[in-house]
Image (tube, rainbow, N blue to C red; front, side, top):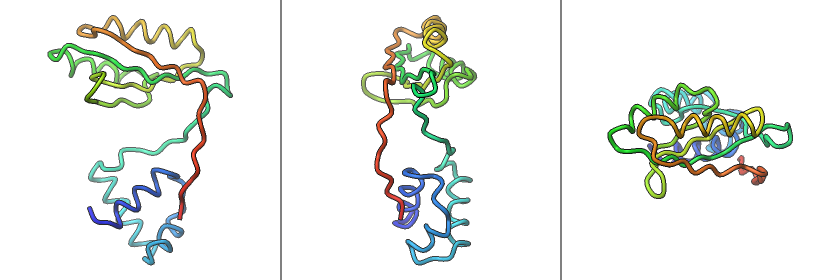
Length: 144
């Protein structure tokens, strides 16, 4: 990882749709060089995916960032269960208040409540702490 790669990551983190030509111009490089760097970041699993940030409330959906406390001996099995749950769109192993944080997206609040209830019954789950997303606050894009 060098300064350029960190810069590429920052640009893509802010707006993954930034054209490679624009990134190349920002770093005074060729598009091919940028494309190769991004491909390497992807192959090394530094970049693990791309997605749109959606304001789910505007489309009558429900989203939560849910903290999950798990007994240490069940952590791997709970992570596997969460990874196979289609409503879990991102999952983070964390330190601090919770062992895991899951971003969960459902068609409505009733479905979200059912998913939370399901997770609370996974073996080893001690507590879940949902934070329901009320609004997505748009940030300023810092693209080159």
